[in-house]
Length: 346
Image (cartoon, rainbow, N blue to C red; front, side):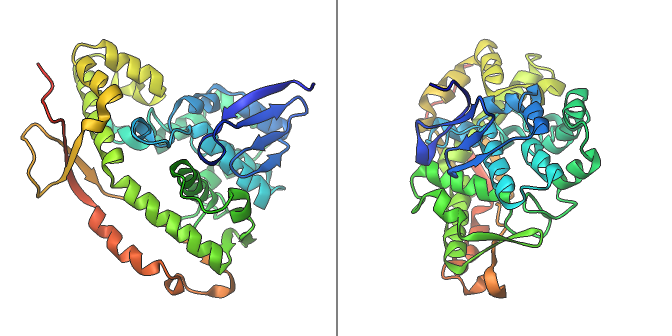
């Protein structure tokens, strides 16, 4: 029997399956149903601490406490890498960029963005400039890799034109699989896309399905299951830093487990972190204009991810049946209040 080394656990549509790297070096992605043969450079990147750390960061952040969206940033990264290897197999810098595009994320992904100036883009630049990554990239155009990650060079990985790209496509499909709303296997969905220049293009049926996933993700981001835990975790992390339990500069380097441990041990945050871990279902979320106690945490939802797919033949997205539903999404943005039914003591 051939020995296999577990590279990443899957979630959602293929729950219980594993993305594995065999002795021959083949990577199997269980969501997309594709196999990739990593190059020596890619194998070096896969072995870096910066990349392995992402397996200890939840893709959905603390919303994993209330949903089955429990995949990790590494699983998402491997999914994006699989898509790029599918669409652009012979562009080594782009393949490397796919593996490195999320290495700046702090614990619980986007949940703690902005605390004490933390910015995952800045941290990514620091990681990308590190000796570990520089050594692993030996032989590749490092500047091109960085530009591809930022979207300065349009590619199927990322762009700045609000056009669907592989990073968001994997996120939306992975999320839909976790919530059980993906109507067909991701491998079949993938067949509806093709590369058109630097962009992904979909047939009409695939574009409509993708738009439905985009709409679902937007409503999920505005849900109690997401906003509640994020607001509490942010408040707890800020309290921990203010109490001297964590240096602000160290925040982005932690994993979810490391930050959780600090929050559980410190007297300023222990009780609330216990409640967040075990009774997040009790959290109440209200809009700013609705009644809430003075002790409620404030949360601002300022952004939704709405990069739309290109449609084959130049068909405008306005012709898709679900397009009018996009008009309702701005109403989800704004100020929210999050509070427990009973205040935390002390």
